[in-house]
Figure 1 (tube, rainbow, N blue to C red):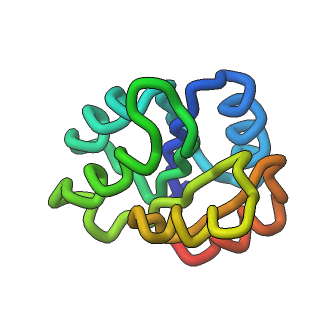
Figure 2: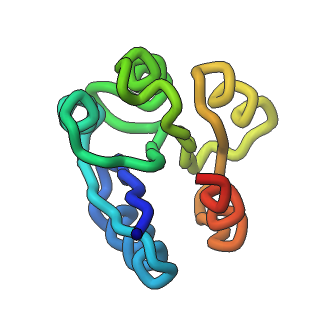
Length: 120
């Protein structure tokens, strides 16, 4: 059965690139363009094996959204990986402190991403 990775990003080009890459590796990739939309989806019953979330989004960013995702009872064990263009010293720690289970910087290194997803 294919693993399902929810991609949350306000930029449809990022969603397209990530989902094309992951689909080629056998993943299914539902997507949302806002954290609010993603939270609604995650509160439902849809099977999601992991979440990739852009940290810099308008309205609600990843730093706000990750703790909310982690509070959804059915999603407690779902890995959340932060994806960010912020690759400065301390950004990884900031993402992990927000509750992310993993961190990857843009442009996304596909091998690193696949390594993070290999555990789901």
